[in-house]
Length: 377
Image (tube, rainbow, N blue to C red; front, side, top):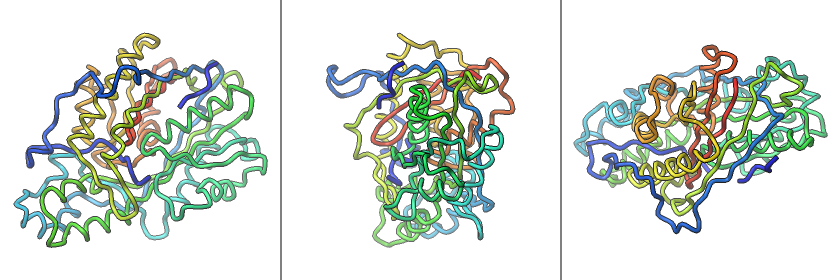
C-alpha cells in the first residue's frame, strides 16, 4: 500500500467566450510550463477500502441566472454586454441558495446522517470525520468540530478540516482511505457544505459600481456561477462491505506555478479565466497522459468531473477524448458547488450505475491541483 500523497478560492476553471477577447477559449496543450524535473504524478492504490454510501442535501431556494443578470442590468448595459451572458458563456441556467431556516452546517448534518443510515453505520462506529468545505463562518475552530458534535460522534473520532479549493472532497476521500487501509480507523465520514450567498451578494454590489470596467467584471464572472449545497460519504473496509464500491486508487498532480490565477475570499473571487482554463487543461492532460502507464481509464462507464461550466466540461471531453454520454453534468441547474460538486453529481448518478461499472472521479482545484480516483461500482 502506498500512503496517499499529496480558500473561497479555487472554485474552478471558469468561463471564456466571445464577448471579450481575453475570455476566448485557448487550445489545450499537453505540456506544462515548468521544468521536466518537477513533473510527475503521485499514485496511490488501495486494496481494502470501499465507498459505502454517498448522499447530498440541496438548498430550497432557486436563483436563476436571469435573476442575477436583472440585478446587474445597469452594469451590463453600461459595458455593452448582452443579457444571457451566464447562459451563453458558462451554461449555468440556475443555482441553489439556502432558503430561510436552512444553512450549510445544518444541511451537511442532514446529508451525513442520511449517508450513515444508507451505509448502516452507527455514529458511534465512526473513527474519522473530515470536513472539506471552502466556505466557513469563522477561521477557528474547524467546521469539523461542530459537525462531530451535531452528529454525536465518539470522542475517539479524529476530526479536522481539509482545505484545497474544489479538490478538497477527493483529497478527503484519499486521506480517509489511507487511514482505513492502514487500520487506523474502521469507518470514515467525508463531508462538505458550501454557501455561495454572501459572496454573490457582495460581488453583485461591487459590480454595480461606476468604476467597474469589462476587465474587472470578467475577473469576477466566475463568482456569479457559484451554487450552494451539502454532501457526505461514508468509507469503510471493502472486506466488511461487499456491497460497497471499491476505491481502487488514483493519482494527484500539482501545478502550483498557477497559484495566483484564482484567489477568493468572503468578499469575492478574482479569476484570470483564460490563463486558468489553459493551465488547468495542461495540468489535467499531463496527469492523464502519465497515468496511462499505471491505469486504464479510457473506457470508464462514468466520468464524474468537477462541475464548473460548459466551457470547462467541453474542454476536458475534447482534450481527453471522452464519450460525452458518459460525462453527467449538474452545473446547468446547480452551478459550481465547489468541492461538493463531485459527490452531489455522484449521488445524482448512482441510481443509474450497476454493479461492476467503473467510475472515475476527476477533480481540479485552483492553485492548481488535480486528482483522479477510480471506483469499482
